[in-house]
Length: 240
Image (cartoon, rainbow, N blue to C red):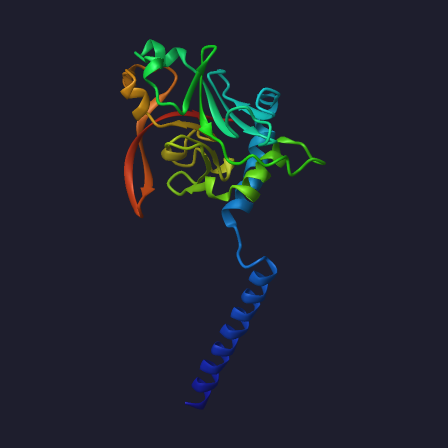
């Protein structure tokens, strides 16, 4: 009986000590550990490296872009929110596949910008100046999103992907671990995924089954605390 009591007390003391260590660590980290912010930064750096010359300086939007291999869509993120002319994070999409599928550009909502054969959809985050002036790189631009606009970042558990929300159901996703892609059917060839909300496009005349180069399918997402299947336009890309 005494041995059992000593064992229980030993376990309790160990738990208290562990809790104290965790508490001190959290205090040192500013009160919280941002697993998504930290993890997404490390994996985004690997995505940038694997994308090679598809990552380019974007002078128009004062930042950088990551382009799909077929050139039909780019994810763009600004490096200086005070100078970006339209949005700070966005997708720029070739409108032709959607035009061919029935799109009437004039019927798109105001957050869509149509110019020179391209559709741009995204969000304006702030009007802040560049915070990484001494390190103006694509990764530094992403870190700026993590540090200043953490609410735009998420984690898609079903695919083991991180994502940046571009507003109105649009986003850019990338694999937490590219080596894991292909292990299951769900993760096949999805190192990066350009994601569009089909609803405004369908409302503007698009027949979703006729859009070439994009996959129209359901994606399992969490909404209001519940998992549900919603339709999306997807352009998945395998980088390796």
